[in-house]
Length: 400
Image (cartoon, rainbow, N blue to C red; front, top):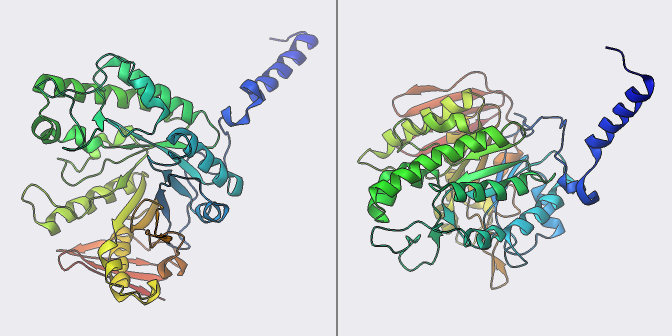
């Protein structure tokens, strides 16, 4: 149908204006459209792809922001900026600093699915909700540990779920935030945690689990079209490795990969985790794979990082694990600790602001999937041969 030229012209102008106008002229309230990589992070096989997961209670320096801007995918953890104000303001300040240096970096806001860690602007709102905190059978509030005041909020309550979504939405509406990292799913899904450890009643725990499903459904419906939703969800201890829940997420963070439970041997536990990770990666899911190297760092005896043989062996093993499961949108982080903490004038996180030698070597794309023979895995990349033995906990990377 043809429109009068006057109406047509002004309709177009109105449409264009509405596309760019922001409330209070605050451009941080606009959601970025048309990134070169869509909502997913940049990815390349040129070198081992890197992930960053970090917190710092004070502001990051300019030099630190320069370092962070090198990473395609970053999660700012729960204590970010809490000394200055609160985690929301601290996260936004850090995220905007990174974005000013690298607009393509994808930045995730950390949000726990059941734990109120404090230091959050949203915690004050939570305290106004009747019955918001989870209670044990004796009527006391369940706490994170015996001598802790950190409590769990009850996502079985509609008002608590609405509060959770409200805080997430406020952060995701900011141009600097590209997604959300959802932690502690495992605490809801493994019934022994709340039923036995926290002495929560069976009826209340079932309500919590039902609320978890409803909250994931809301997150999926309202956020995932424009935002990365990354969960700490793939775990070998779950019946199907967590894959049953992966449809709610764009990918998974990995921790506790070696911590076998339930009487399963460590190699069998890890083999199950590897299979689950491979399945997720081949579905195009994001993998944010972390593995600790703290024990190896303790063996340095004051040596430089690149001369620490224990660290080299541990990092090669961790990197081999990662490369056995990696596909497009898989990223790797060998971890000392997540925090940027200065003690006695010295940085306690020894890997902070460091680039290990393996990240400087050319990798190239994989020539095919990994092969498995018992507990031994192998895989070929353009510039690297990977050999992994999860029984002996040894990995070899042969570069060429």
